[in-house]
View 1 (cartoon, rainbow, N blue to C red):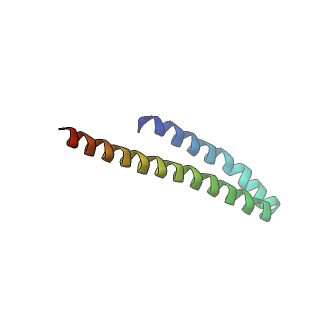
View 2: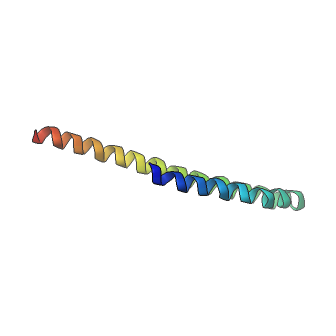
Length: 73
């Protein structure tokens, strides 16, 4: 979907902007850096799961719509 590309682009920019902070914290306190890295991975996984859920739901709706259209015809 075209409007999803903006969300993915913003997510990419957010991840890229957070890398220097992560690198600094890993040098200063490795445990904190690891925790922050896991946080980044977690919110990326949550967003990807939301996209997958959206597409699964959208595909199911389209299939139901096509079945109804065939039944009406």
